[in-house]
Image (cartoon, rainbow, N blue to C red; front, side):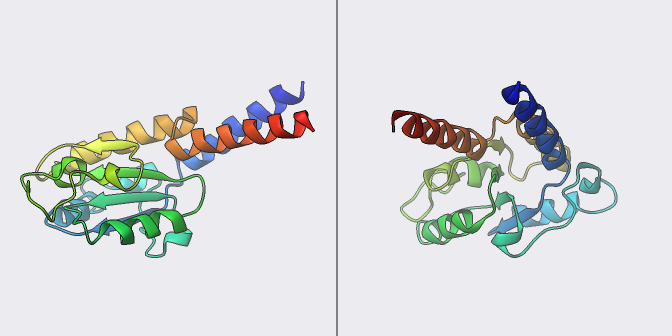
Length: 168
């Protein structure tokens, strides 16, 4: 009975999280222009509850990596991700954030997933605003199901803690 109640409570919390994504834009390159156009009235990401960018990682739960990540930026990106509130989600915006793009050289990181776990990838150089909206819808579905990387990690830690307490 208790498991049924907590699962229904978690479903309600995930529904609320789904429509209140507080994004932290980590904008490093030209995809930033497309990112700004998504917040404009024509595409209006406010419909998805993601309209207010937070410029403090402690106030955000969605990290949008927009543009090329260099090897020197990797530790800073990891620090930003670690400072974010739990549960947290990550979107890699554009081909440079997803795979390193056409910068196949020593300084460009071959994808943001080398540093942080990415939940949704948006292809394109630059991606169309419609693709960004599709990615937000995909992320909302993952949040509702509890399939985000951090949500799965938190569940695993909770199970491991319960198993450790049961052994004692």
